[in-house]
Length: 368
Length: 219
Image (cartoon, rainbow over all chains, first blue to last red; front, side, top):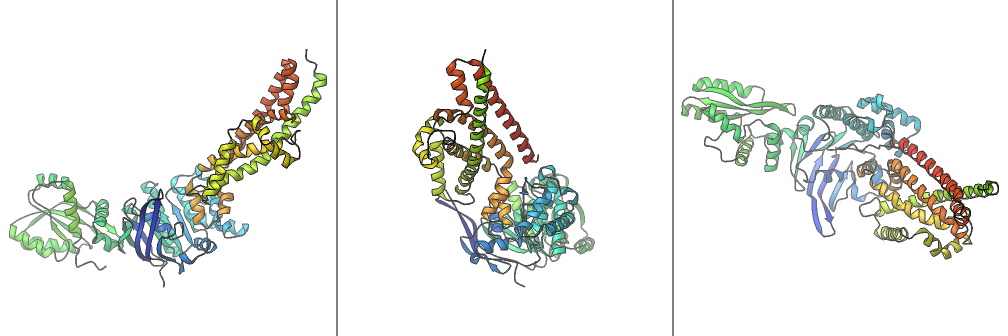
């Protein structure tokens, strides 16, 4: 099966004031397979929005080719491009609903463009509003809806012509956490039930970790990392990815936290990465007995990433130094283990880097 | 005491002439001005149909015409009025300078109201595959409709004001009536009555405009 979206050496330049050139997207090669939920993450200005706008021709590449559903966008006429857009839905951070039309009118708009009869439009609109769970709001105007309801209208409108690809540009960034969860659940349902390929732009790592199968990390217009979400999160190769991952997980003590912990726990402090359901901790329990070392949990957390456990636990280990050395050595063969620096940390920045560096030593070498 | 008997039919005729001028000007300039406003908005750099020469031409034209006092404008475009209407005197002939001036004014007002339309909504329509003319007709204008109605209401008052000057070229109307039978004959009550009639027309228009705008805004 060919990829749903394929970028080949795509660059996009913007000329500001006729002189300065801004390279928003820089030589991107990227394939997004059909039926996947792909996240595009990165800090503001990394080029995420421009990248997805190249998919439906809202932006045209300065160099390179974008192929969507097997069609090379560079070769499309204006009419061909409009037809292609019928197969690519898009939802937005600010919803971008037509304030002059009712909820039903908004959802019917793309159907009118596609030339559907009034009767078929009405049936399809009812079906869509039911699917996104706002059938009772059909005759309301957008200004009468909450943010979550507006985004549901946006989603229903984007799905009206049964697109095979759905682009979500910061679709949950304007919503509160609970509404965000609802919308993410809806996007997952769309992907599972309709098989729609979804591309999600976000700066919220929680969105990526709970929704996406794969993730592309952007920095300064380039895609610096792309792979299954678990691999990228568990073993980030690039500094920017590490920073993004760290900003989400909070599973390791920061420099100031570590200093405080030191005051209470004088023993050696070791962080163990958790990548499995209990095996690492079982092994640790056995080794503690074997080496006669005592462990106290002082920090940490385990969550789930792509339905797999992911996190780390920080222990204070007390016992004979050689015994602890042996235990750490043996444990490092099973899981990422890092002994946190004993000396007084000099600054937050360096500590963040150090903590992040340890994440890049995965257990058994994460397949990429 | 003012003798209203002989004045009444003249007042009625003047009223009809004013209504005739204002309604036709609003209809003609309403459509032409909408076109000018849409072009000003869309041909601007970064607009839907970017075209610098067209934008510059319209922009300069609007800026040149708009500040000319209407009474001078009527005389200044006299030759053009003669060419288009076949005459430069009478109620019908003044329709040309009125429509021309009102078109440019409306053009600017329309442009300013279209600027307020959320570009994200336009982008959404593009993403759905709508053509540019279709976006203008089914998104841009409907989204600005409430503001446009208020803008047109504002223009209506200006057009009533313009129509008062029609009398200068024998265009008749309430302005002419107030000057000829009121001011020039030192008949203060006639001027007063005319003013009251004009106020009623303007108030009725404003009230209607507000109602329509509220209906269009969906708030």
